[in-house]
Length: 80
Image (cartoon, rainbow, N blue to C red; front, side):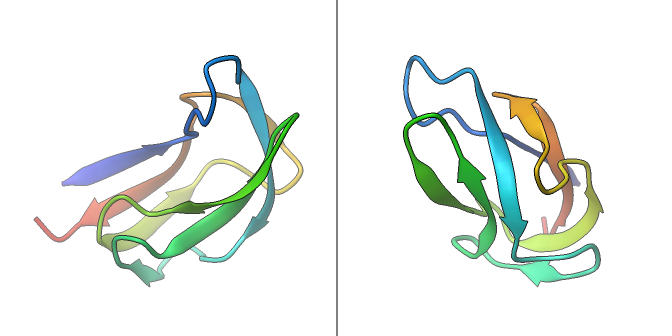
């Protein structure tokens, strides 16, 4: 099963964010809670954790790219 990792919303007024660093790459195996990337918004810089375990098969959000909340930034092939 493929899980679409979307750019999360951390505040009601948040509409977009910028990926400042990826901590994982395509082909890496991740567990729930592993840090995938760092996200910068107007008010906060926050590490974003993986909500699922599996293998990263695609990365769509690039470093320094500003994306809207809900945009798919990575695809993770889950264990289930």
